[in-house]
Amino acid sequence: MQVLPNGVHWIPRYLDRQDQEQLVDVIRSVVGQAPLYQPIMPRSGKPMSVRMTNCGELGWVTDRERGYRYQTHHPVTGKPWPEMPDRLQEIWRELSSFEHPAEACLINFYQENSKMGLHQDRDEENLDAPVVSISLGDTCLFRVGGTRREERTTSFRLASGDAVILSGPGRLCFHGVDRIYPDTSPLLKNGGRINLTLRRVTTP
Ligand code: SIN
Ligand code: FE2
Image (tube, rainbow, N blue to C red; front, top):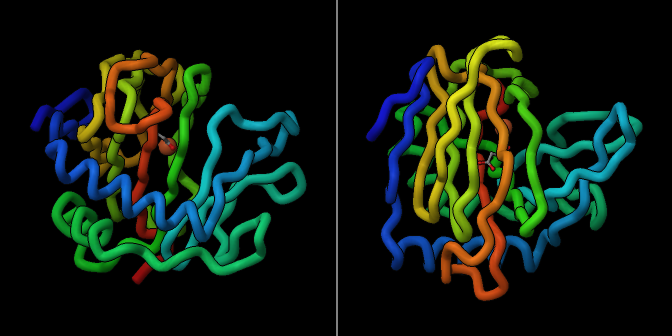
């Protein structure tokens, strides 16, 4: 495990190749029930370059009218999000050390040209629980800073199987994805990167 500035934890190769393949199968079954959709940013009204879906009791969504929030239903199908698979809850238990289960897993899918701007994760009512993030597929350039946008940032490459934990002083650190490196992993047949973020949303 590596500790980055502000207490952000990075675990390179947390999942081995077989674990990664099994997790991709789990995600495929979630996406089969809750298809990826293109979220819209509230202020600009622009579509994000990342497609998303969720599993668990709550899912993070955004649209032009109502902005960033958690809700119990898929915004396109109107169905409740698929249940959180046991494997994801197991990863949450191991990496968060939080005594209550995760309620949301956001599944982000990045194509070659997708990015995610620098932001804080602060739509959760409960900010005590860590945010646990898992990378699958192509490598990305990840950037993490401090709790103010102006603070200096550090960039590093997240590869398939890596985990990042935002906890304690690092829970509200600004972070983002500047680029994807195509063809850097054979895990996903058609390339691209999947990021899973596990979160506790409500106060237990
Ligand atoms: C996010 O912050 O929502 C995604 C981070 C990542 O893709 O690694
Ligand atoms: Fe985030």
